[in-house]
Picture (cartoon, rainbow, N blue to C red):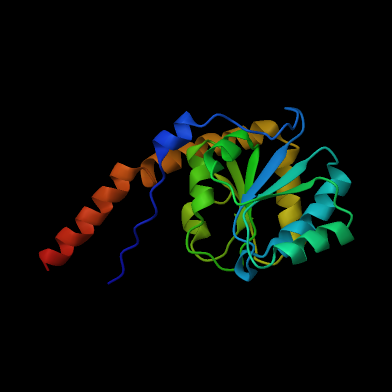
Length: 205
């Protein structure tokens, strides 16, 4: 009695986006996280993982796009841990450009519906690193379009981030698979047809 219909991704917006790396050099990997600063998004685990990333991949950069009630707390956490390559970007309207400019897109949620930024990232051909929270495993194929780890496990998250930061060829392979998945599952016409099929099944029942 349950039918799951995913979010749609604006593929035209993704295709038209001009990459924005915020001045970071091409040889320095950019990891982007797009999420509200709220408890369920669990940025604390991402920042804990990033402490390990900075110690082993000092050229990598973490960009956090979003706002929320925990922002001040998380800024303090990053300062206390001495994180040098974390940028808090605030609320942004140019998410497609930020995704296009990133090398990886990350999400460390403890609970999640689907993970819209992960769907957008895959549509843009970007590999993702995320947790197995909520519907994320339905959006991301572990080992195929990205790497997933248990929620709250900073070490596993760090290992996945480091694995893809160090391996551009693997990132690109996952990104290509992610784009193919997005085109087959998250394209507006595909999602619209899924809604139509749902209504047709209900009306004919």
